[in-house]
Image 1 (cartoon, one colour):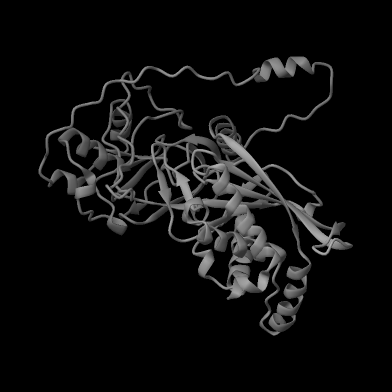
Image 2: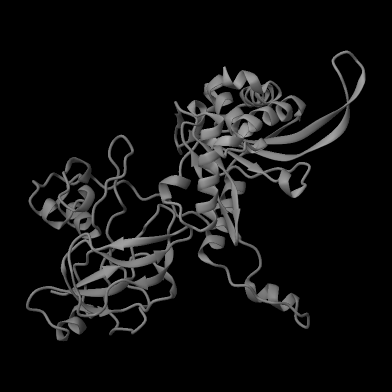
Length: 432
C-alpha cells in the first residue's frame, strides 16, 4: 500500500517548516538513508533522510512552500508492484505512514479523508532522558503493542527504530492511562490583528509577515516572561586590568591569527564562576532541578530576523584562544543559519552583550531552561572613588543578571555575580 512521507520534526521546538528544496523527483527510487529534501526550520536549513525504500509516486508539497505543519503529508512512496493509480485510494483512507500522519493542507489537494489517521505518540525518551529515535509508524505500532521503545535496539539509519524492530519485539502490557487533567484556560493574548489594524485605519504602514523564527521567538519569550519568576542583580565592573591584560595577550597571539575580545573574557569568567558557585550551575526541569557538572555557556548572536544562542560546551576547561576561535566560528555559521540543533540547544546560563551597540545597561529575559542570563553593557570611562578614597578615572562596564528564582535564590545569585565580577577584575587569575 502506498506510504505517506510526512514533514519531519527536525528539532524539539519545530512546529512547522518550509520545504526549501526537493532532492528527488517523481519516479525516483530511494532507499533508507537517502537524502530526499531540504527543510528550513525556525533556526536552520537541514537535510531530510528517507526512512523506507520505494519509488516516489507523487510529490504533494511544492518547493518553497512555507508554513508546512509537522506531520503533514509531503509526498507518497510506492512499493514494488504499486502504481500511481493506487495513490488516490491511499490518500482517501487512513494510511500507515513513515512519519506521524495528520495530513494538513498539501499543495495539490487530494480527496479529503472522512476520518484522518490518529497521530503517532510523541517521540519517547529513555529513563536517563536521552531521546529515543524511532519512525512515527514504529512509535504507533509500539503504542498499540504496549512496547517501551527505550528497551529496543534500532536497525535503521543511525540506530533509528523502524517498523520491523517493533513488529518483531515481544508485546508488554499497556500501562493504565492517567486521569485526564482539567482543561487549562488560555490566557488572553491581546487584541486581534484585525482589531489592531482597525486602530490605524487611514495611516500608512507596511505589513511584515512573521517568519518561523520570529514566531518561535515571540512564543518562547512571551512564555518565559509570563512563567519564570525573574529577579535582577546589578553590578559595575572596572575593566582597566582586563583591557591591559587583553592587549598583552593579543600582542603575543598576533602571529597565530588570534584576537581576543572582551566578550571572550566574559564567557570565560562566567564559566569559571559557575564552577565556583556550583549550586547556580543548574537548569529548571519542570518538577526538579538538574545540577550540571560542566559549564556550558550560551551566547546570544543577533542575525537578520532574530537571534541564535550557540552553546560553548565545557567553557570552563577551554583556553581563551580556543573559546575565541570557537565563538567566531559559531557566530559566523549562526548568521548563515548553518548551526545544527545540538549546537544551539542546552547550556545552563546565557550571555547577551549589547555593549557593542552603545547600550549602557538592560534587563534580559531568561531563556528556559537556563537558570540565568547576564546582560552586558558598554564599557565607558567614568569617575570612580578608589580604595584609597581618591577620585580617579576608570573604564566601567554595567551588567545585569536576570535569574530564575525557582532555581537560584538571592544569596546564591549574588555569590555567582560577585564571582563573575571578581574574575573579570582579576583576569590573570582566570588562567591559573
